[in-house]
Amino acid sequence: MLAVVVLVGAQWGDEGKGKVTDFLAARADIVVRYQGGNNAGHTVVVGEEEFKLHLIPSGILHADKTCVIANGVVIDPAVLVAEIEELQRRGVKMARLLISERAHLILPYHRLQDAAEENRKENGRIGTTGRGIGPAYMDKAARTGIRMVDLLDAGTLCRRLAENVAFKNSLFGRVYGTEGVSLEELHRACLQYAEKLGRYVTDTGVVLHQAISEGKNVLFEGAQGTLLDIDHGTYPFVTSSNPTAGAACVGAGVGPRVINTVMGIAKAYTTRVGGGPFPTELHDGLGEEIRTRGREFGTTTGRPRRCGWFDAVIARYAVRINGLDYLCITKLDVLTGIPVLKICRAYRHQGEEIADFPASLRMLGECEPVYEELPGWQEEISGARRVEDLPENARRYIARLSELAGAPVAMIGVGTRREQTIVCHSVF
Ligand code: IMP
Image (cartoon, rainbow, N blue to C red; front, side):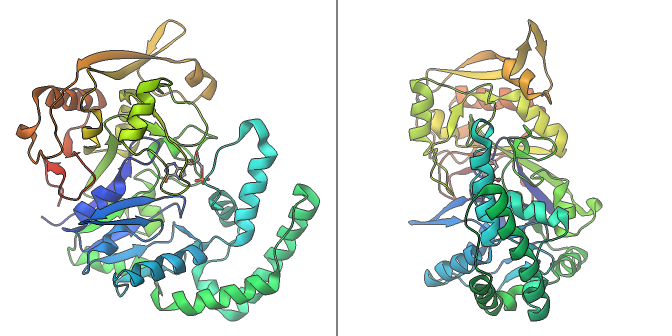
């Protein structure tokens, strides 16, 4: 069956999208990143090797897949060049990497501005990844951004860099009271990036259109997660792009009708990095245990992730906002051995139960999770390859998550390796 599939995070990011993308990439012809930048981090384990990817789609680890970094992504050229060179050093071929001409660049002044903004906020810090993502999208919206196509055009690059650096340096000096950047150094670095990246840059919208018309399998790989969406997430504690499914169209230049299937990835529990409310957060030893067992430390920043119970209110919200056809539940093995598992089925606010995710952060902060309890399982499940291999309590847990979220489960992850995946329904 030929298909165009969008994968999105159904929680606050870090749901294990990298592994699922890598798994599904085996059946895809093209894998596409459509938003975010190197704030994302995917850990993919292939055989004995572990790869950490930030910008290049995980499909690159399959030799014959075309990997597209589409227009909606913000690209730090220094990071991309380093990632390409590191992968090449480890024997991964880059022949099929394509970068959109329309993708915007993250430059050093964006990283400085990200840090300066966070410092300025004191109590209201977002806890960004510090990669310059927000300021790069700010410049995109302000129409002062520099795109890949400009990087390759020496005259435009020189002019736009001069204008931007002059403005940013005055911002750093006069508003933030910090050091700026050197125009000459940045210009020199950009010419090198152009030299190294130019061969990959193309009109990726044309390539995707062609592939879809020919009936190829295309996988859109979302970064971050629904609750970090700038429109639908826990604003202002969100990222600066739309990690939700609708953004795949805008971020890659395809129409909504080409998409056949949308799958949301959710952990069997919940995690969050950075600031902002998190109703089912565990502040006790169990939260610590899940963090250790699930290796819940950021791929990008190494920060410990906050851990808590599965929240069906946000899962249901993700099903609605993304139009999820299926859920993929990851890291089920991390819950093995916990005697009683809790699932948040609703929130209680001022004595009343609410089933929908509130927009007001104040209200969200006042919400108490309403839990139901299910018995856990003791059996090792990392060798399970079919649903029938799972202990009954694990199956009941998955069935209840699915029922409360309102979407069928297509895949279940039971370990970090590619093959530690149970497929209940094939999307390709
Ligand atoms: P930014 O995307 O670096 O601006 O960070 C904004 C918020 O999104 C912070 O809370 C980050 O921790 C969070 N964030 C950004 N990217 C990721 C991700 O890939 N996984 C999880 N959280 C992320």
